[in-house]
Length: 278
Image (cartoon, rainbow, N blue to C red):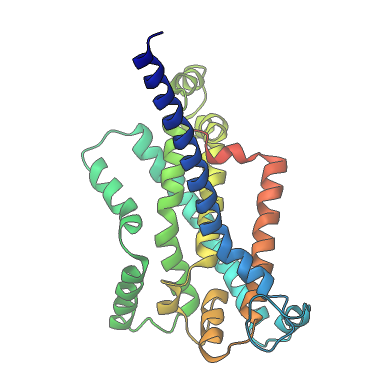
């Protein structure tokens, strides 16, 4: 090997090492950027001070006990869970039917239906919330807070289910459906016993995404809440506006723990591969 070839090889080795080092540094920075604020909130929730401080001078569970003494905590968390469950269930039914039509159907308005269904993913949620609020005020329906919240959350969660289930159905083997129909099964039995089991990963992942997004939504919910129904994230934001105590940090840590438990249960039952299967 001549000298020029050796120099070229050394330069390539240096560039390779530099590239790997840069990739590792970017990965570490990305993890710190994403997890850093969460760690700050979790650690700050254990402070004994009467205001949010980091790092805490003394550690205490004081604010976790304080959470359960708040008059609005129990009612708002029940409201949030109820709205998230109902909206996720309805979104799953709508999403499965729409995804089925988009994955297997062929009709003129297919592109238009896809655009309408997925538009909420393209528009800022705060714009949708403001638009919904104006529509409700125009028809004097702004007082139906619970129903309005469910309707609004269905609007923003259906696209998650549609995209997930559509991807799952598009990747299934259509010959299995044809074989079921050819053996005498009705379209309904084929759909229930063949199509849905094959699309199960997409349905579960879409449902989890829809529930999580609905439960944590603030941008749309703030326009639709009222004296009849208020979600936990909106109540937390209102609390932060008028108080500087670490209670919201404690609530956030509790909800983070609940989310981790959900993903652990999902991992032990159906597996986290449902989020990546096509």
